Length: 191
Image (cartoon, rainbow, N blue to C red):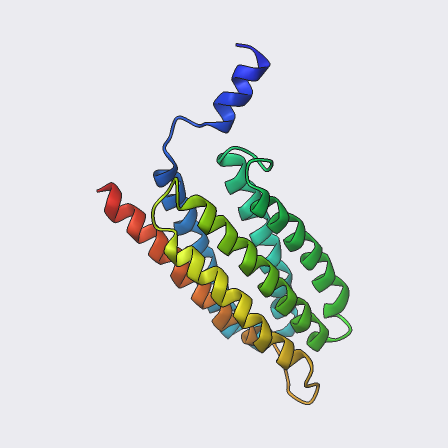
């Protein structure tokens, strides 16, 4: 088998997109639901764990987009996911840099990330509509994420308002619901 054949086999896996996307969306939903539960309970009560959760969220998004893009033809074939990987990695670093000094600045960073990653998720959903079903929840999620950015930016500019990881939890919960809907629609269509 030549190198070109190996690369083509990896870029075009034998498994259809729907079973992969069904599992991918399901795992993303489960992670997000767990993250929300931890944010509202332990993360809210223990600031150190809340900080770890704020770092983990963009790190997870970075990893998830990387794995999904590689599974679906690579980063070059998925430019919106490539950008999402880069943006999420930069945001993870920015969260690490700001979280110790000013949680309001961290929430502002999360707001900028919500806008950018939402627009990139929307773009990925629009692109995938041609090849996979159940993309409307991803498109809605991306649009809502971009709009949620305004809420985070408002919170970040009001230093008198106390902030914690719990401010981000409703945003993550909506994302989890959208991922769960996509996974359920794909599972229903497959059966």
